[in-house]
Image (cartoon, rainbow, N blue to C red; front, side, top):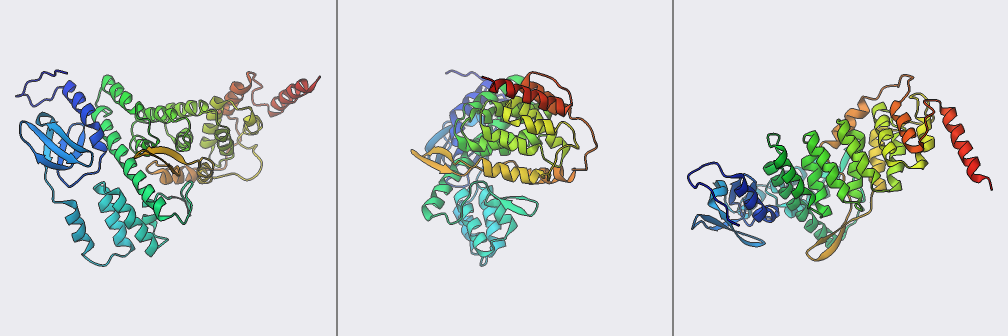
Length: 414
């Protein structure tokens, strides 16, 4: 491929940026050998700079060497070897739980994920109730309860090492998606650039990229979150993808994003989706009930009929109501099949997690907004029933049930 550009121009042609990004994207996901950094418009390459001759930098990483054209490098940062920095911090004083958490965060800031995990484990060993350590370990706090989907105590040393390897790969995918977002998906980028970024993202098939995509796109613009639903929909057989789609369908502030998530859930044909959404019809917060009804209308599972009929009016649902926090906990307990992925030519299994940044805070705010509902009809529930049955009995629960009974009796006749 031949790329022409003016070497005196400070503006790098878009074609050069895209070509270079495609060439070096795999290296954006690798752990660094030391602290040297090359800052590009598409991300940051970290490694040991072993030469900078012939208008190119040669960077050594764990995957080998790569030549980066000097024209695409915006800034070069030289840093001391990270192992020396780490040893200096570690020797400062005997670490307690707080100190281990601080060291873990220092490691995470430098993508030393495995080392960070060791410090989190040490912090929890010294103080099992340490809140920051629990958060770093992947637990989510909803109210007074901590949970992490699919996690079992007493993991073996081999399992711990395997999990550390998986976390390294996850962190690599997160760095790669971060580069994609910055290069193509920014607020000021045009439609063509966004479509290029979308194409790159949807080519990623590893389920270990789900966490990074949710963290980086789940708090972005509505178009980022809509793209996230499309990405999650590609992972038809992964429980982590299903759990994130349910969260988006119930909690996202944008109606278009919620609808996109519901449509992706419908494509899964998974009865567990209906179970969780039916449970959400009992939520204390009316908005969550209405959103669950919209999703059930797209899923179109007949087992939801009775619950939808009961939810037609805000004051009609008998029994105890649920908080959204309880529904999210149920979600973690329901979608807990291990995530299976290939790492270093091995198939490894890891528990699914819900990786949205700020989810606990969002859930707390939604639960805090719950008020005793005024007696009114829910049009979203009516529309879901119409989508499910093809008939319309308005908000008359008795008429809906009579229609159901008539249909059952007709089917039972010889």
